[in-house]
Length: 243
Image (tube, rainbow, N blue to C red; front, side, top):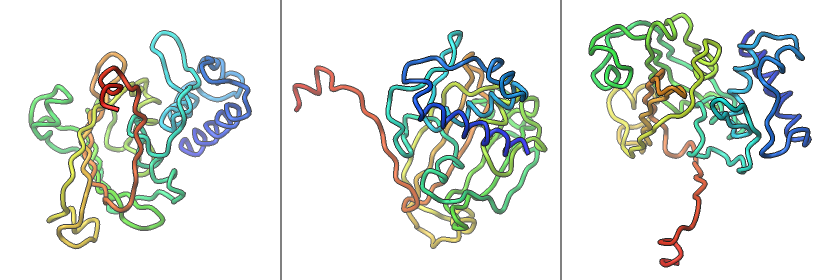
């Protein structure tokens, strides 16, 4: 129900932006004001704005407010921090999830270092295969601290960003590392592809405005399932000389 509400609210806000009610560069009303006008909780409105932020319609400025973006909303723009559900939806497909497993697991070394916990300390873990119109396209694992999201609070489908936002842990930015590779072992089995199938692996750590790491993720994407775009600024002086 919460997922349905936040997407309904996001749809209304998106329509108001597209109609020109709020123009690029303009600040939209605050979350409490929008929530009061719509008679919904502030957390639901915050989650809806998070959806729009993932889609590139708005950007949050700490201590200032939420603004309509100037930049174009490019499909699967790597410069935007969007969830896999949004990524799949933007391709025109219906997102889904299979082989879902939620629980508490000992933190691997790289997860412990990112979340600032001891190696082996219990962390909430969500493993799932994301589908696009039923096709298995992403094998993914998410880790977070149990005091941020308990295992039962992890959404089996939908945006973990929105779930964190509902708990006052809005993600401000993420640092991702992209690595090309091939599917082997359990990854190939879960995606149901031949061994050696091309993959794009994305390892990411997401943080709040205060720099607190709230989510670590590892995603194995089928290389032929998505295309990505990147908005490149410039050129600077070096670019002008080269071109």
